[in-house]
Length: 276
Image (cartoon, rainbow, N blue to C red; front, side, top):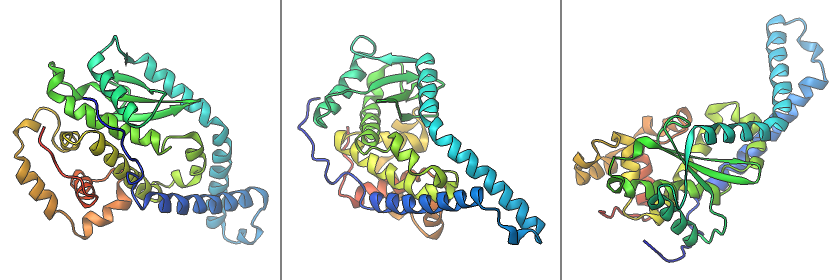
């Protein structure tokens, strides 16, 4: 299982920083407008009662957002407590095969602090998720990934752990990250392009740490039970043909990119499917 230390310099998607910086600037513009609405009463709107009603709504949302910023830490810690209470913590003594994969990934990434890892059947939607609380990050895997014989899907787990470690390495779950995007996050279609490109970045980590973990993506398309029945070559041909205007416009509609788009992005970055 042991592998060499990896070079992370090319694993962040080239568009991620640009999109993030653009949204941060937009977030500050929205914040400035929100504060202006709170401090100054736009008297010129009084003859237009409908517009005045909308401005009052915006003012309420602005105040809510400003109050919500200090509550970020409380919300994150509450979420951590909920996950701890509804999950099994994976360690060297609890599902050691899975923990060994996490340890090896961290070693290859030069991480001295290994994030906590949890297995849950209800705390997250399938299939994996990374969160941060005060001073630490942790990963949650959904139990639906696993067969009774865990070895059957260890390639999926290996990919997903690499994918989630990418979120930590790129500071995608850091509290300051969320604070800088408070207002933008309230408008989902604005935040979606960033969420999608961050998924592409995390996929690069997964594919680098688990070259045979192609099924870590495939499980998102067809689920665990039927993965072994898929004609891989035909599916990859489907991925090469996928595209068009509607697939492109989906970037604003859905935060999570299509599996075929994720495969295309990995292929464009030079990653190739390696049978397990």
